[in-house]
Image 1: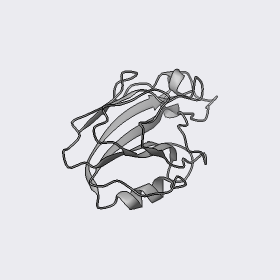
Image 2: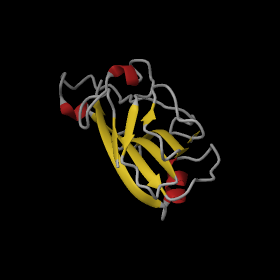
Image 3: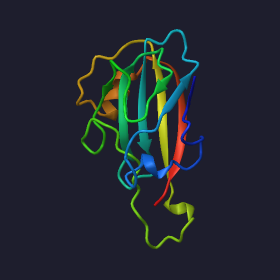
Amino acid sequence: MLITSPAFNDGDLIPAKFTCDGGDINPELQIQNVPAAAKSLALVLHDPDAPVRNGFTHWIVWNIGPSTALIKQESVPPGSTEGRNDAGRNNYVGPCPPASPQLQRGDPAGTHHYHFQLYALDEKLDLPAETDKDGLEKAMAGHIVEQAELVGLYRR
């Protein structure tokens, strides 16, 4: 299984358009090679570098149809559910690392890693929209058929 974006390559900088410094909209995501056993897909956008315990979850979506090949910019696939991110909202919240005025431009210490984690599941999930990343992970336990990841970087 593979998750990519035409907006940035794995390991590259995420364009500001998709961050709090731009439009704060989700980038287009392309999905390929979903296993035949998948009944649904789940997506988590997580920043493990955030200066809070366990990092910061920016976006979670589940019950994405397994035939989905494209998650369009500024939208989620029909029939899917957006869960509660760490901002307490049920939508995409773009990368927004704290600005570090003491860092010099280009210093990688201010760079955060944003993990778009895609999971193929052997069932659809019956979860309320208030479900957060921990709740989603508990529900997915034992049901993950395959997973893929796209990592984007961002610094201010």
